[in-house]
Length: 219
Image (cartoon, rainbow, N blue to C red; front, side):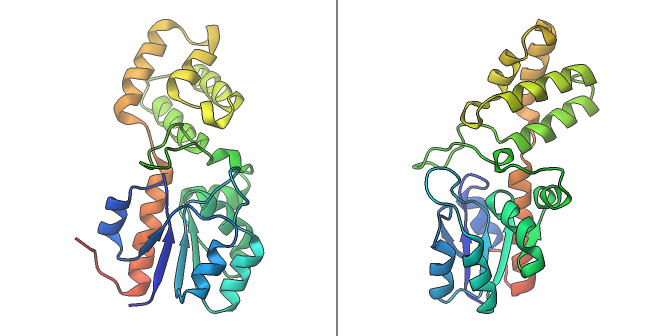
């Protein structure tokens, strides 16, 4: 099998990832990490998670350098989706809904996929806006909220700084636009029905790599 290096963090837990694809998993990528992976002999690099504000983000030129070296570079879900939308015409491969939304221009800001997470456990401590969008859409489609409430909650979510985005904070920030009964119904529903599109896209990327690399599921 080819040498595969995946940069993964809060988008998908390591245990689930390893069941999908046998690879070397590294923490969210910062600037220079993709160059290092290419230098370490990677045939395939998958960028899922990367740092945004803590340190310098993955640079376009290092992705291009890896591609020119013959490395397959795949992006999805989070920082990977953002970079793939910017560089798919230069050889990077994008996978998933988030990538498609960046590519189409429906999403523009890295704020859409940003979150804070516990560096020790990898658990998310806030909700990325892209997941909130999908959750609110589902809530509207299933009758949990109407269009007016959907819109009010989305406005509230967008107004919050990304580390502060939780569903309770979003509901609280909606003010009088959402009545008490609807708030309680939505919060009860979201506990078990919240969408995690970033996770879905991360899974899709690993499955794609498994298909092109001829790998097998690891148990």
